[in-house]
Structure formats: structure tokens, C-alpha cells
Length: 189
Image 1: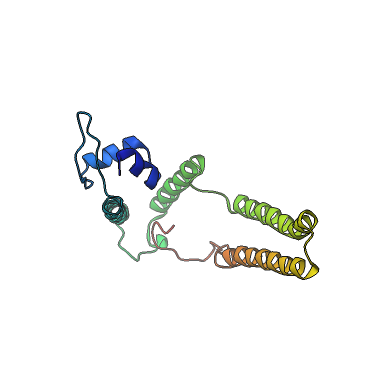
Image 2: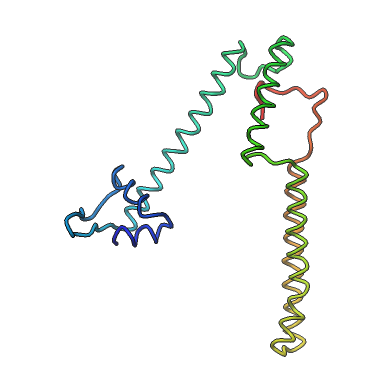
């Protein structure tokens, strides 16, 4: 493949492919002076997966190091609860956590539970309404037999039921936690 074909095949831009080549992505034939690059999709894809895995590993190591550094700064150890700290340190930690959450909300990295619930219900309503109307609409356009229409109604009902079940399961798995009396590890998110 050419660089352009690879970019299109992997869903990235041409400058991204060029940057990947500079970082060591395997090239079948070097390009230059009117000569096109030749790349093998499978080799490039494998190289990119290895890069992603390496990035994920580095990100995980960085998060663990940050947590360890925060604990060391306040004199805590893994497994300590926030109640073990003096009130001023607890207040400082809470203020820092509130500021971090405010920053994340401003960047749309953190959303209010009610906003997520409202959006999920809106999307579910659209899906439900469209799936309920679909059999009638398709029947009118295509003059379907009653047996086929019933199968279509059943299929749409199953989809609506599955979507509702998935939404309900999502909320059951994420109950609102009461903070009073709950002991949390330091920097527990």
C-alpha cells in the first residue's frame, strides 16, 4: 500500500502515517525522489497495536506513580483511610479533589450523573419510538404479509427490551454511594 492508502485503511491522516514511519513503523520500500513508499497493512497494523499497548502500559505506570507520590506527600500509605489524616490535610486533599473534578467537568471529562441519566433516557425514548413505528411504516411502504409484520414487531420489541435492560443494568451496577460513615482509601476515585 501507499502512505495514502494506509492512512485511509487505518482511518488516520497522512501526516500521522508519516509520523509513524519516522517512529519506526515497518516499511516494505522507502519512498523519495518520485518513488512511492510501499507498506504492508498487516505489518503496520501489528506495529500500531504494539505501540498502543506500550502507551497503555506507560499510562498505567504513570497513574500508579502519581498515586504513590500523592500518598508520600501527605504521609500516607496504601490502604490508609482519609480519616487517619489530620483535619487540615483532609481539607487540603478534598479541596484539591474538588478542584480536579471542576477542571474535569469544564473539559467535559466528568459529567453529572443526572445529565448522563437524562441523555440515556432521551436516547432510549428515540429508539423506543422509532422501533415502535418501524413495523407500520415498513408495512405501508412494502405491503407486507401479516406474518412478516408480526415478526418485525417482535424483533423491534426485542430490541427495545434489550436497550431498556442494558440501561437499567448500567444504573444498577453504579448505585449512588452515601458518603456518611463510608471509609475510603486516600485519593479513592
